[in-house]
Length: 178
Image (tube, rainbow, N blue to C red; front, side, top):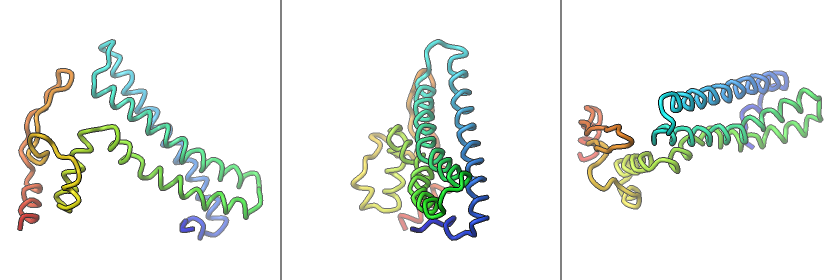
C-alpha cells in the first residue's frame, strides 16, 4: 500500500505516530471548543437558534463525529499497539490500512459541506462549469443569478445583499471566454 509513514525507520515511525496522536487529540479538542462556542453563542441571547447557527452546529457535530470515528480511533489503535509491543507485522498491517481512514478524514469537510449546504453545492457546481463546461452542464445551477455576480437572500432576519464580482473573477471570466 502507498503509505508514506510505512517507509520510515521504525524508531522515526513510532515517534511519528505519537506526534499524530497528539495532533489528533488537539484537533478533537479544537473541534469541541468550536462547537461549545457556537452552541453557547447561539443560546446566549435567544432561546431559539438562528438558522445559520443551527446549520453550523449540525455540520460541526457531524465533522467531529467523523473525525473521531475515522482518524482518532485508528491512530489511537496503532499507537497503543506500538506501546504494548505487539508483533511488528500486525502493527504494519494496521498502519497500512490506517491510510484509508486518513484519506477519508482529510477530505471529509468538502463532502460534509457538499451534502449539508445547498449554497455550497450550487457554488461548487458553478465553479466546475467554469472549468469544465460539459461536466458543469450536468450539475445544478442557481435559479436567478450566478454566484460570481452575487445573489440576495434572507435568513432569520439576516440579509445578504448583492455583491459585485471581484477583479480576479472578472479576469478569470475573460480568460475563460477568450
